[in-house]
Image (cartoon, rainbow, N blue to C red; front, side, top):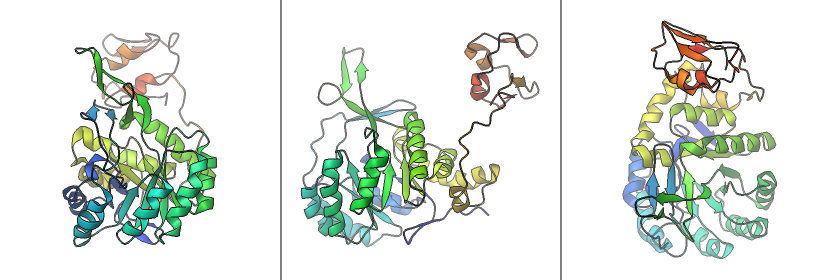
Length: 357
């Protein structure tokens, strides 16, 4: 039987998947939902001193992307310390990661008030290295709970940034936060759909997965033993496994649930054993310890079509950059035109093409 469990910094998780900080974890009812779900942990929305004042609307989505102008929790920290978290602790059955922000002055007040509730702390780092030292140092001075820094993808020297954070006392990393800024336009109204400061919004969801995977992979190579939580673009059991193989210990997801509904968490966890069996994975621990080969393993040949599996859907014909594929009685390839790129194989919905990737 496949082993989904993960142990990290002395805390046990039934499986690696949890929500990311955001609009799905901003109330007691939402925390209870995840406490009752099969996720391996619960995460709070980012808590700060004052309640955020969020302009509405603040979230829109397409099939693969979420755009948001959300800020931190729309409740003051006292609502969390006096009502939400004390009530949640009466029912708590799994690890709780408390997200907080954003400055050293905030942390001076927040951490002593929140430390009794947290198994881990997570702090978003929207600032440069100059602000990193006082922020991290202040947090670790007021708690013995492990601190994870949540990395902004806009930090260019993120390896140096993490090194600094670890030097000041951070115990782990969450990578990565939303990317952007982006813009969403309402063509009918000739206006932006939502946005701050001239139409800015932040981008998350499956579309940013390659960016997040690259960061996770590079962080793991630079820090072989640093606890690492991946987030950014997770939408399936295979995505979870890819992030673990890239080097993550645990995985957070939010935007896929905004796009498809929160039941996707339980569905992914239900799908994990089957996905692990298909790829010969015995446990999360064994996958995490498997070296990721950074040399592409594709054959680089011409596409070979399994005509018994092929449904003649014509996707490969339509997308071929060199118009090398055509349908006669079956799909055929003109090898003189074919550039052996792999697009046809990657787009085939029934895996009827081999030989390139």
